[in-house]
Image (cartoon, rainbow, N blue to C red):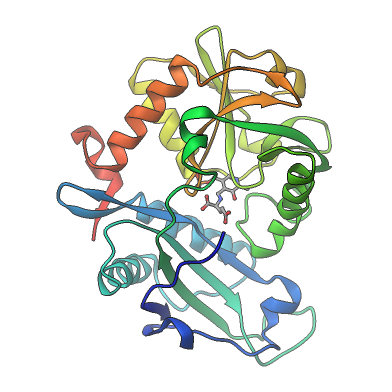
Length: 304
Ligand code: PPE
Protein backbone atom coordinates (compact mmCIF):
# COMPACT_ATOMS: atom_id res chain seq x y z
CA UNK A 1 0.00 0.00 0.00
CA UNK A 2 1.38 3.42 -0.91
CA UNK A 3 1.46 5.37 2.33
CA UNK A 4 -0.54 8.63 2.29
CA UNK A 5 1.25 11.40 4.16
CA UNK A 6 -0.44 13.34 6.94
CA UNK A 7 0.81 16.34 8.86
CA UNK A 8 2.11 15.20 12.25
CA UNK A 9 3.30 12.05 14.01
CA UNK A 10 3.30 11.71 17.78
CA UNK A 11 6.82 10.69 18.76
CA UNK A 12 7.92 10.13 22.35
CA UNK A 13 5.43 12.61 23.71
CA UNK A 14 5.61 15.38 21.15
CA UNK A 15 4.00 16.00 17.78
CA UNK A 16 6.62 16.21 15.06
CA UNK A 17 6.34 16.86 11.33
CA UNK A 18 5.69 13.70 9.29
CA UNK A 19 9.04 14.02 7.47
CA UNK A 20 10.98 14.58 10.70
CA UNK A 21 9.76 11.43 12.48
CA UNK A 22 13.03 9.55 11.94
CA UNK A 23 15.37 7.09 13.63
CA UNK A 24 19.05 6.10 13.38
CA UNK A 25 20.00 3.16 11.12
CA UNK A 26 21.44 1.39 14.17
CA UNK A 27 18.06 1.37 15.91
CA UNK A 28 17.79 -1.97 17.73
CA UNK A 29 14.35 -2.81 16.31
CA UNK A 30 15.59 -2.42 12.75
CA UNK A 31 18.12 -5.20 13.34
CA UNK A 32 16.22 -7.56 15.62
CA UNK A 33 12.49 -6.92 15.07
CA UNK A 34 12.17 -5.73 18.66
CA UNK A 35 8.95 -3.77 18.46
CA UNK A 36 5.25 -4.12 19.22
CA UNK A 37 2.42 -2.39 17.47
CA UNK A 38 -1.31 -1.92 17.10
CA UNK A 39 -3.68 -1.28 14.22
CA UNK A 40 -6.83 0.66 15.04
CA UNK A 41 -9.47 2.49 13.05
CA UNK A 42 -11.18 5.80 13.58
CA UNK A 43 -14.53 6.20 11.81
CA UNK A 44 -16.65 9.16 10.88
CA UNK A 45 -19.91 9.35 12.81
CA UNK A 46 -22.76 11.88 12.94
CA UNK A 47 -21.10 13.31 16.08
CA UNK A 48 -17.58 13.54 14.67
CA UNK A 49 -14.72 11.05 14.50
CA UNK A 50 -14.75 8.08 16.90
CA UNK A 51 -12.04 5.48 17.51
CA UNK A 52 -13.24 1.89 17.65
CA UNK A 53 -12.37 0.11 20.93
CA UNK A 54 -9.37 2.35 21.55
CA UNK A 55 -8.78 1.39 25.17
CA UNK A 56 -8.86 -2.34 24.38
CA UNK A 57 -6.27 -1.81 21.63
CA UNK A 58 -3.97 0.18 23.90
CA UNK A 59 -4.36 -2.46 26.62
CA UNK A 60 -3.30 -5.14 24.14
CA UNK A 61 -0.37 -2.89 23.13
CA UNK A 62 0.72 -2.68 26.78
CA UNK A 63 0.35 -6.47 27.18
CA UNK A 64 2.44 -7.13 24.05
CA UNK A 65 5.17 -4.83 25.39
CA UNK A 66 5.08 -6.38 28.83
CA UNK A 67 5.46 -9.93 27.46
CA UNK A 68 8.72 -8.75 25.84
CA UNK A 69 9.84 -7.03 29.07
CA UNK A 70 9.60 -3.72 27.24
CA UNK A 71 8.77 -0.93 29.67
CA UNK A 72 6.49 1.62 28.07
CA UNK A 73 7.11 5.12 29.39
CA UNK A 74 3.38 5.94 29.08
CA UNK A 75 0.23 4.59 30.71
CA UNK A 76 -2.67 3.20 28.68
CA UNK A 77 -4.67 6.34 29.57
CA UNK A 78 -1.88 8.63 28.37
CA UNK A 79 -1.60 6.73 25.08
CA UNK A 80 -5.38 6.83 24.58
CA UNK A 81 -5.21 10.63 24.90
CA UNK A 82 -2.19 10.78 22.60
CA UNK A 83 -4.10 8.89 19.87
CA UNK A 84 -7.01 11.34 20.09
CA UNK A 85 -4.66 14.32 20.03
CA UNK A 86 -2.86 12.97 16.95
CA UNK A 87 -6.15 12.56 15.08
CA UNK A 88 -7.30 16.05 16.09
CA UNK A 89 -4.09 17.77 15.05
CA UNK A 90 -4.16 16.03 11.66
CA UNK A 91 -7.80 17.13 11.23
CA UNK A 92 -8.98 13.68 10.14
CA UNK A 93 -12.56 12.42 10.22
CA UNK A 94 -11.55 8.82 9.68
CA UNK A 95 -8.18 7.09 9.57
CA UNK A 96 -6.08 4.07 10.42
CA UNK A 97 -3.99 4.42 13.57
CA UNK A 98 -0.60 2.78 14.03
CA UNK A 99 0.93 2.91 17.52
CA UNK A 100 4.43 1.39 17.61
CA UNK A 101 6.83 0.87 20.51
CA UNK A 102 10.36 -0.21 19.71
CA UNK A 103 13.84 -0.66 21.13
CA UNK A 104 15.77 2.39 20.01
CA UNK A 105 19.34 3.41 19.36
CA UNK A 106 22.28 2.93 21.69
CA UNK A 107 23.08 -0.75 22.14
CA UNK A 108 23.59 -3.74 19.87
CA UNK A 109 23.27 -7.41 20.62
CA UNK A 110 20.53 -9.78 21.55
CA UNK A 111 19.99 -8.60 25.08
CA UNK A 112 17.46 -5.88 24.31
CA UNK A 113 16.86 -4.73 27.89
CA UNK A 114 19.46 -1.91 27.95
CA UNK A 115 18.06 -0.34 24.75
CA UNK A 116 15.86 2.74 25.18
CA UNK A 117 12.15 2.28 24.36
CA UNK A 118 10.53 4.70 21.94
CA UNK A 119 6.82 5.10 21.21
CA UNK A 120 5.21 6.63 18.14
CA UNK A 121 1.63 7.05 16.96
CA UNK A 122 0.97 7.67 13.27
CA UNK A 123 -2.39 8.14 11.56
CA UNK A 124 -3.31 8.12 7.89
CA UNK A 125 -6.35 7.55 5.69
CA UNK A 126 -6.57 3.85 4.79
CA UNK A 127 -9.81 3.34 2.90
CA UNK A 128 -10.05 -0.41 2.42
CA UNK A 129 -7.44 -3.07 3.07
CA UNK A 130 -8.13 -5.52 0.27
CA UNK A 131 -9.89 -3.13 -2.09
CA UNK A 132 -13.47 -1.86 -2.06
CA UNK A 133 -14.65 -4.83 -4.11
CA UNK A 134 -13.39 -7.29 -1.48
CA UNK A 135 -15.95 -6.07 1.06
CA UNK A 136 -18.85 -6.90 -1.26
CA UNK A 137 -17.51 -9.57 -3.60
CA UNK A 138 -15.21 -11.47 -1.26
CA UNK A 139 -11.63 -12.69 -1.68
CA UNK A 140 -9.92 -15.86 -2.87
CA UNK A 141 -7.60 -17.38 -0.30
CA UNK A 142 -5.16 -20.28 -0.21
CA UNK A 143 -3.75 -22.39 2.62
CA UNK A 144 -0.13 -21.39 3.03
CA UNK A 145 2.76 -23.83 2.95
CA UNK A 146 4.16 -21.67 5.76
CA UNK A 147 2.95 -22.58 9.23
CA UNK A 148 1.96 -20.37 12.11
CA UNK A 149 4.65 -20.59 14.75
CA UNK A 150 3.83 -22.64 17.84
CA UNK A 151 2.79 -20.83 20.99
CA UNK A 152 6.25 -21.42 22.46
CA UNK A 153 8.19 -19.71 19.67
CA UNK A 154 7.44 -16.06 18.92
CA UNK A 155 3.93 -16.39 20.36
CA UNK A 156 1.26 -15.16 17.94
CA UNK A 157 -0.47 -13.58 20.95
CA UNK A 158 2.27 -10.94 21.09
CA UNK A 159 1.68 -8.36 18.39
CA UNK A 160 5.41 -8.01 17.77
CA UNK A 161 6.86 -6.50 14.60
CA UNK A 162 9.23 -9.47 14.15
CA UNK A 163 6.28 -11.90 14.04
CA UNK A 164 5.13 -10.37 10.81
CA UNK A 165 8.05 -11.76 8.82
CA UNK A 166 6.17 -15.05 8.94
CA UNK A 167 2.96 -13.36 7.79
CA UNK A 168 4.89 -11.67 4.99
CA UNK A 169 6.28 -14.99 3.74
CA UNK A 170 2.74 -16.34 3.59
CA UNK A 171 1.45 -13.20 1.88
CA UNK A 172 4.17 -13.25 -0.79
CA UNK A 173 3.42 -16.89 -1.52
CA UNK A 174 -0.35 -16.27 -1.67
CA UNK A 175 0.11 -13.39 -4.11
CA UNK A 176 2.43 -15.44 -6.30
CA UNK A 177 -0.20 -18.17 -6.43
CA UNK A 178 -2.87 -15.68 -7.47
CA UNK A 179 -4.72 -15.52 -4.14
CA UNK A 180 -5.71 -12.36 -2.31
CA UNK A 181 -4.74 -13.72 1.09
CA UNK A 182 -3.20 -16.72 2.86
CA UNK A 183 -4.55 -18.86 5.69
CA UNK A 184 -1.98 -20.21 8.09
CA UNK A 185 -2.25 -23.57 9.83
CA UNK A 186 -0.36 -24.30 13.04
CA UNK A 187 2.21 -27.11 13.33
CA UNK A 188 -0.55 -29.59 14.25
CA UNK A 189 -2.44 -28.67 11.09
CA UNK A 190 -5.21 -26.72 12.81
CA UNK A 191 -6.48 -23.57 11.12
CA UNK A 192 -5.15 -20.37 12.75
CA UNK A 193 -5.71 -17.11 10.91
CA UNK A 194 -4.85 -14.98 7.91
CA UNK A 195 -1.66 -12.94 7.65
CA UNK A 196 -3.40 -10.01 9.35
CA UNK A 197 -6.93 -11.25 10.09
CA UNK A 198 -8.82 -13.79 12.17
CA UNK A 199 -11.26 -16.07 10.44
CA UNK A 200 -14.76 -17.41 10.90
CA UNK A 201 -16.86 -20.02 9.14
CA UNK A 202 -20.61 -20.57 9.16
CA UNK A 203 -22.06 -24.08 8.96
CA UNK A 204 -25.76 -24.92 9.35
CA UNK A 205 -26.39 -21.52 10.92
CA UNK A 206 -23.61 -21.91 13.50
CA UNK A 207 -20.73 -19.44 13.46
CA UNK A 208 -17.35 -20.79 14.53
CA UNK A 209 -13.82 -19.51 14.88
CA UNK A 210 -10.61 -21.17 16.12
CA UNK A 211 -9.74 -20.73 19.82
CA UNK A 212 -6.82 -18.52 20.83
CA UNK A 213 -5.07 -21.63 22.19
CA UNK A 214 -4.61 -22.88 18.61
CA UNK A 215 -2.12 -20.01 18.21
CA UNK A 216 -3.54 -16.77 16.90
CA UNK A 217 -3.85 -13.14 17.77
CA UNK A 218 -6.90 -12.51 19.96
CA UNK A 219 -8.43 -10.04 17.56
CA UNK A 220 -10.52 -7.17 18.82
CA UNK A 221 -12.64 -7.30 15.66
CA UNK A 222 -13.01 -11.06 16.28
CA UNK A 223 -14.32 -10.33 19.76
CA UNK A 224 -16.63 -7.59 18.43
CA UNK A 225 -18.11 -9.93 15.82
CA UNK A 226 -18.67 -12.62 18.43
CA UNK A 227 -20.56 -10.13 20.62
CA UNK A 228 -22.59 -8.77 17.67
CA UNK A 229 -23.46 -12.30 16.50
CA UNK A 230 -24.53 -13.30 19.99
CA UNK A 231 -26.69 -10.17 20.14
CA UNK A 232 -28.39 -11.24 16.92
CA UNK A 233 -29.02 -14.67 18.52
CA UNK A 234 -26.69 -16.57 16.21
CA UNK A 235 -24.92 -19.46 17.93
CA UNK A 236 -21.17 -18.68 18.09
CA UNK A 237 -18.56 -21.22 19.14
CA UNK A 238 -14.79 -21.37 19.41
CA UNK A 239 -13.59 -24.71 18.03
CA UNK A 240 -10.50 -26.06 16.35
CA UNK A 241 -10.87 -26.22 12.59
CA UNK A 242 -9.02 -28.19 9.91
CA UNK A 243 -8.61 -27.21 6.29
CA UNK A 244 -11.47 -29.41 5.05
CA UNK A 245 -13.83 -27.49 7.37
CA UNK A 246 -13.03 -24.47 5.22
CA UNK A 247 -13.71 -26.40 1.99
CA UNK A 248 -17.16 -27.52 3.12
CA UNK A 249 -18.52 -24.55 5.06
CA UNK A 250 -21.56 -22.53 3.93
CA UNK A 251 -19.93 -19.13 4.50
CA UNK A 252 -16.55 -17.82 5.51
CA UNK A 253 -15.17 -14.39 6.39
CA UNK A 254 -12.10 -12.75 7.86
CA UNK A 255 -11.88 -9.95 10.41
CA UNK A 256 -9.28 -7.37 11.40
CA UNK A 257 -8.97 -3.69 12.19
CA UNK A 258 -7.42 -2.97 8.81
CA UNK A 259 -9.44 -5.58 6.86
CA UNK A 260 -12.73 -4.95 8.73
CA UNK A 261 -15.06 -7.83 7.72
CA UNK A 262 -14.17 -9.41 4.39
CA UNK A 263 -16.15 -12.32 2.92
CA UNK A 264 -14.15 -15.25 1.53
CA UNK A 265 -15.24 -16.48 -1.90
CA UNK A 266 -12.98 -19.51 -2.28
CA UNK A 267 -10.33 -21.52 -0.42
CA UNK A 268 -7.67 -23.40 -2.44
CA UNK A 269 -10.00 -23.14 -5.43
CA UNK A 270 -12.97 -24.66 -3.58
CA UNK A 271 -15.74 -22.18 -4.21
CA UNK A 272 -17.77 -21.13 -1.17
CA UNK A 273 -19.61 -18.55 -3.23
CA UNK A 274 -20.76 -14.98 -2.88
CA UNK A 275 -20.98 -13.50 0.59
CA UNK A 276 -23.64 -15.44 2.48
CA UNK A 277 -26.62 -13.99 4.38
CA UNK A 278 -25.09 -14.27 7.86
CA UNK A 279 -21.80 -12.74 6.70
CA UNK A 280 -23.66 -9.83 5.11
CA UNK A 281 -25.83 -9.27 8.16
CA UNK A 282 -22.81 -9.22 10.50
CA UNK A 283 -20.95 -6.90 8.13
CA UNK A 284 -23.93 -4.54 7.94
CA UNK A 285 -24.31 -4.32 11.72
CA UNK A 286 -20.54 -4.02 12.21
CA UNK A 287 -20.42 -0.97 9.95
CA UNK A 288 -23.43 0.54 11.73
CA UNK A 289 -21.69 0.00 15.09
CA UNK A 290 -18.39 1.62 14.05
CA UNK A 291 -20.25 4.57 12.53
CA UNK A 292 -22.15 5.19 15.76
CA UNK A 293 -25.52 4.06 14.44
CA UNK A 294 -26.13 1.38 17.09
CA UNK A 295 -26.70 3.07 20.47
CA UNK A 296 -26.25 -0.23 22.33
CA UNK A 297 -22.61 -0.28 21.26
CA UNK A 298 -21.74 3.35 22.04
CA UNK A 299 -19.34 2.09 24.74
CA UNK A 300 -17.03 0.81 22.02
CA UNK A 301 -16.52 4.28 20.56
CA UNK A 302 -13.94 6.74 21.86
CA UNK A 303 -14.98 10.19 20.73
CA UNK A 304 -12.05 12.21 19.48
N1 PPE B 1 -4.38 -11.76 13.31
C1 PPE B 1 -3.27 -11.09 12.94
C2 PPE B 1 -2.04 -11.86 12.65
C3 PPE B 1 -3.32 -9.71 12.82
O1 PPE B 1 -2.22 -9.05 12.45
C4 PPE B 1 -4.51 -9.00 13.07
C5 PPE B 1 -4.58 -7.52 12.93
C6 PPE B 1 -5.66 -9.75 13.45
C7 PPE B 1 -5.54 -11.12 13.57
C8 PPE B 1 -6.96 -9.09 13.78
O2 PPE B 1 -6.86 -8.38 14.99
P1 PPE B 1 -7.78 -7.10 15.29
O3 PPE B 1 -7.27 -6.00 14.42
O4 PPE B 1 -7.57 -6.82 16.74
O5 PPE B 1 -9.18 -7.47 14.97
N2 PPE B 1 -3.73 -6.98 11.92
C9 PPE B 1 -3.36 -5.57 11.93
C10 PPE B 1 -2.22 -5.28 10.98
C11 PPE B 1 -2.52 -5.38 9.53
C12 PPE B 1 -1.41 -4.86 8.65
O6 PPE B 1 -1.45 -5.15 7.46
O7 PPE B 1 -0.52 -4.14 9.12
C13 PPE B 1 -4.57 -4.69 11.65
O8 PPE B 1 -5.59 -5.17 11.20
O9 PPE B 1 -4.46 -3.50 11.92
